[in-house]
Image (cartoon, rainbow, N blue to C red):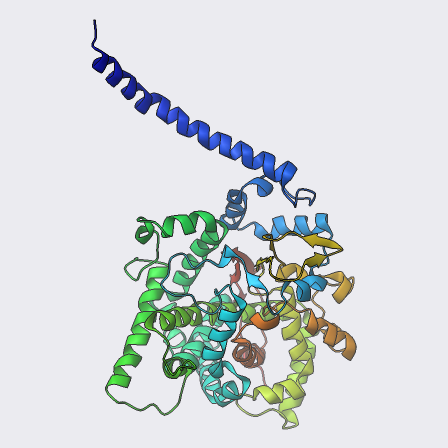
Length: 503
């Protein structure tokens, strides 16, 4: 007969190895069943229509992001709910709106301005780093942009016009944008145009990193739980990672360390760029930005300051060339400007283009309206200490994440008319009052107090690059491809046949 100790040990082993396993499975299933019942029958938003799996688990949204099918899904949702998304922008994105935990930074030591959730903390950081992005400072940097435009056109002529080889403008638009932001932002172009390639795989690293962040943003409860625990260091991006965000962080550190060395050695710079302004920024207490804060902001300049502008550049080129009548009208406007002496040679100023090329400016606005570089969601959290948030007569419960998509808000027929899905630049020129309405509800650059800091610099690039590209004639041998990765658009396969044209 077995002793009581032997029987007890056997029972414990059985409970640990068998029942323990099924106990965990049962707990997971019970928790998930509770979640389904709660969200479907008791949650304050239970009466709002939506997909079943999207209602009960974030894994559904994560899958859509990873599968690059977010826009298709959201389009069907917006059609079902009938929300006038553009008209809701001032309500959702008011001055004191708080970003949701969707923007959790995944364990990084410091948050960049784009991720700061609290509106007061965001305003504080924006005042600290905002001066170099002001219009007055950007205008002073215009010769630097012209320098990159000229180098870019020279390289295109050398490699593609004279050789009669097709060029993939999706790549070359991004090369232009990366060299411009590195010239204006960090004091020296990184060499994308000169080398005619993705230097160091930096652009691909941006796309790889953004894809991971897109998944992490949708799974923020899990990410916050993991990164706050002892295993967090294994799930946080570091410069030691071989690809993606690790590669970007190594580039960032190289840029910052080089400037730090210059400052320590007492070397004076002929001009103050964005990076130098970051080094010289002081809090009201007279303290500089911390190294962690500096790294966070420079990383955002690398990611958001170039890739999104390259996308916008490609969108303008694609839309204009896909509409022969609009292309010809733009070329005629440009020819007239040069012939009459209103546009400077070799590269017109942004002010000249704005004044003497209104149709081209309308083309920029229309292309960005239809293809904003960040097309998916920008969620805000409804807070208890703020006035009730009311959409279409319904009070949105406290704690709810609510959002609009720039892609769909910019296509709201109530604002832009029945032809809102069509590229028609004339809509911006037909009626001044309507144009003001379009601007009021335009979500391309964000909204309200969170509007993109780099908007003026990006506009200056777009006033020049695509315009000067359209001085030669060209054809599109094959259809371009637009993809969504991590919530951002980018283009592939915009193959152009460039030819010289007398102006």
